[in-house]
Image (cartoon, rainbow, N blue to C red):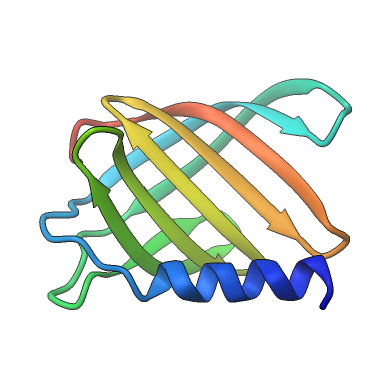
Length: 120
């Protein structure tokens, strides 16, 4: 099985997990790190809507909406697995700190460093 296929299976498994109380957040990522190329400035934003009763969430970005599910982990923070625009996204928030990793076919990954408001 390809790495991309394995990532899809892992994302599918995580999408089956839900967590109560996952709330809206506005995120701003000020650094973009691409593979081994280092990091550059970024102004990427992501607006995460409140989770519905089934734990599904929608995140609005400048290139379209991402959909997925959240997983609440009290000791670590909150994580979301999202899909859209040809990639799988893992958003992790702890306090106001946030990390977003974007997994694309190849495999290729870009990581965004930033903050999300306290709406968690």
